[in-house]
Amino acid sequence: MGTGLDWPLLLDGAASGDPDEVLHGEYAEAEREAALRRLAEAAGGGDPLVRNRYAAGLLALGRMEDAERVWQALLAERPDLGIAWLNLATCHLTCGRLDDCAKALRACHDGTGRGTAERQLAERRITELDEARESVARQTRLLELRAAALRERVGLGLARPGDFKQLARALHALTQVPGSGVTGRDALAAARQARDEAPEDPETLETFVLGLLQAGSDGELSDALRLLERVAPHSRVLAVARDLSVDPALQADAGARRAHMRAVSRRAFAGDRAAEDELRLEIQKFPQNFQYRVDLLFAVYNRGDRIEARRLADELAAEPSADHFVHFHIAQLYWILSEHEHSRRHFALAYQTAATEEDREDVREAVRTVGAGDPAQLGRQ
Image 1: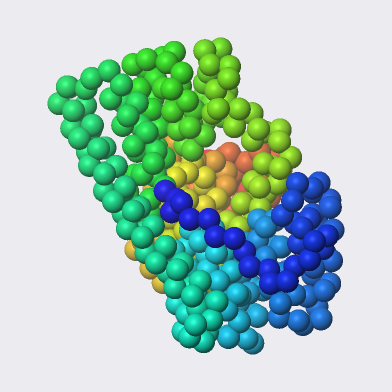
Image 2: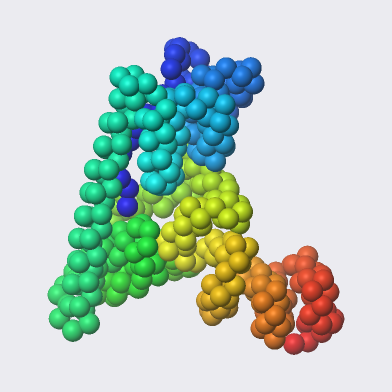
């Protein structure tokens, strides 16, 4: 659930026609990348304001982790540079890291002079952030109460027409809330019941498609999209689903998102608990993303929580749709935890579900490396 805040980046002196304009305007991807390269070259000169503009360009192109690194390095040298603190706060806001956003705003406030424009802006944004977080908390509580009431009606057999649709929408919104405990699967289950209740209602089908995009299978999604196209050819959800597969800008955004999540996983593995929290929220929304779940598994193990790592591995092992990737990685984790029988079983499953000879050789090599038995026996189990 978003805060509704949208703070502009502060560039301080950007002139018309310079690379910043290209980064924020309607230009082709090649032009934007070329503009970013020019900014990177200029930033190499060390000017703090140019480095700030380079970081802003990175953020404008969706490279949030790179932007954060540039601002952090700049602020390590110039902790008094208020616009860099303000932009770093905007970067954290964009990533949904509200605690880090608040810390950056507070650092700007405390590190700049009384009465300066930067301190005054930091004060306004601190107030805006506090109010937005209170609003989100209220909305979340209302959603939780609504979902609880709808679930109770359903459980008592008193559901009215449309209740499943409303429940699915409430649960879908709660998947965006850290710590809500509502997963994409919960929202999809309610959306599927709503679809069964009104199989050709356009709004119900849209809710079902959204649930499938989060937690469903590609085959089921294809069928739902075809039906939605028949009953509501001008559906906004249908248009979004189409754009995700063909629009270059959306594909670029998706690529930037994947790069961001890879960086989040690396930070989580290194012990960054904020990154681990972000990874958990993504898993809450997208439980079928096994990459995120394996990344969390090893991040938790790496910080020393063997009990939680075992629980996460067991959850993955119980997945009916677990594939080669899942079996291969949890087999290794089970071996590390001295759960050797579990490990051997999942090495065998990883071998059986491998799609290529290269994947099978990876399993054989892992079995040899950990000493889990004779790799030649894998295909016979």
